[in-house]
Length: 63
Image (tube, rainbow, N blue to C red; front, top):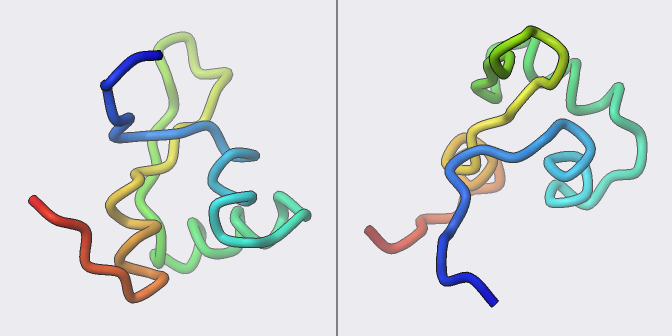
């Protein structure tokens, strides 16, 4: 298994990390500016910053 920690994850993975099932919840957080995201090259896949997920959840990941 890889020791690489992702810095961004796809929308549905972010939704699961937030403990939710509906991707619309995560989309609302993005629109509200509570999560940072970007579109992957080609514009089809939206990637959500793992750091912003931790910040939203109140976690303080080790640097």
